[in-house]
Image (cartoon, rainbow, N blue to C red; front, side, top):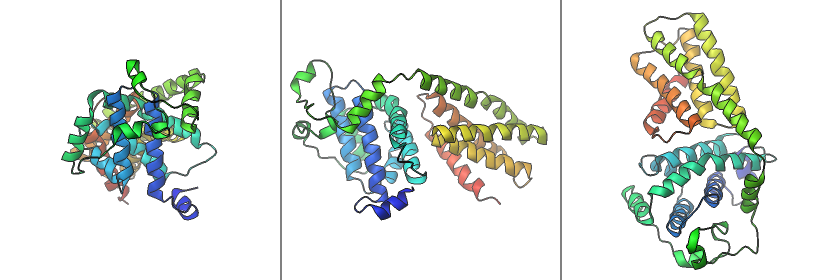
Length: 307
């Protein structure tokens, strides 16, 4: 069932509303898995209010990608948005996908909260042209439904009102994440990382040889086969951005094979950007890959238009 169909069938929940609510819930559940101070909770409140008040969450995320403070988290949120807005949703498995998306952003959200204060948040949002966000913080934090009873740490706990009378679905998901035996999942992720990362350096070296014409069609076919296999694997697991990068490279390799595309130094560098994005996302490295991601996406738009 696609989001467009949901939009037609559920009154009051348009495409953008569903994507916005899903992303906000991902952020709140991820926050519930972190050790939070009062200051960090206030930043979460501000971030939530920012997304609640925006008209187009996709545009907001793209704008946040341009900020040093927000870029890493925004890139992960853009992956989640892409899934919600473009992929067929199996509602029987949506809770599993939701947990995967929560896990996807936990590390980046934690790092974001380590460096961003409420004042920094307000200043950055203002510089991005969005104006100051008004939040009645004390009042909101005493509401039993706010932030799904988010927990705080240390002595600050006695200073806040925590209501646990009701247990929301997000809290149940958090408990299941903590209590479940995830050793099998860890092994699968490690195997996935090995499969995806192992061919990247050989492909990088091959791209440089393509530029000077020092390659054979058999070599190209071998790498094309690897890309197709890893693309299918990434798609099954749900790594949308890794899938997208593979699809761009597959299309480029197919066009090169059919002699419909003769790469230049510039386009080879764009293809290498796809490899860099794949490596950074799979390794979950704390690098700012905005430049590479933009370059790869720009190349993808051009290459997909090539007949």
